[in-house]
Image 1 (cartoon, rainbow, N blue to C red):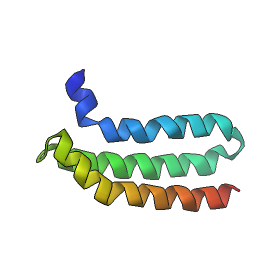
Image 2 (image 1 turned 45 degrees about the horizontal axis):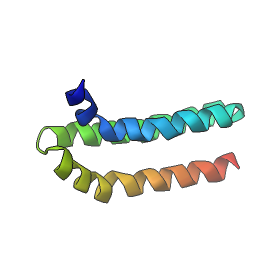
Image 3 (image 1 turned 135 degrees about the vertical axis):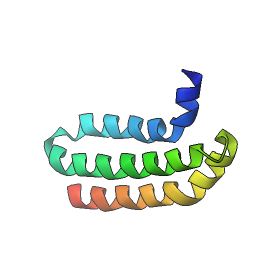
Image 4 (image 1 turned 90 degrees about the vertical axis):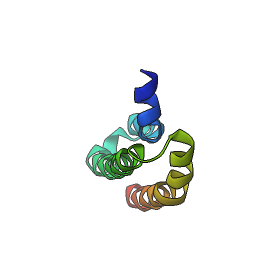
Length: 83
């Protein structure tokens, strides 16, 4: 179980706020589903690639420089479309 959490830590951290956000804004579920798929899929793909070469600490550094800014940009664009 610990290995699973270490392998998919960033995907889980991304998924938790998205689930909470979906409960709050249930009316726009179709658009929200597209956003969730984009964010989770991009995070999962990058995380799977980094799991092969790096441990959790190195993976965290690389994720903070690559996927976190991309996910923030995607989230902001979708929030603009929702509101």
